[in-house]
Image 1 (cartoon, rainbow, N blue to C red):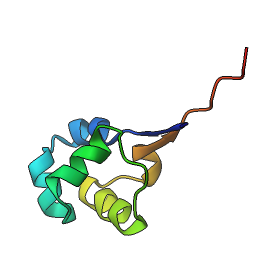
Image 2 (image 1 turned 90 degrees about the vertical axis):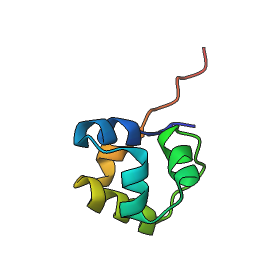
Image 3 (image 1 turned 45 degrees about the vertical axis):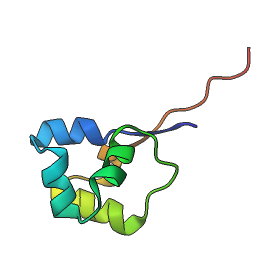
Length: 72
């Protein structure tokens, strides 16, 4: 898949840990960890909104599209 979640990068920039962000966003550590480690298959807009508010960032700061390489 060509979608990359850069939550760990934004968390490092904002100097916030997983537990603190989990408390601010209102989702479990397990679900936040899945997002942080780029293993999520989907994200709710309400969750994305809460993360952006907690980290004071834009969705594009967290989600990145990486184009697939053409077949060789």
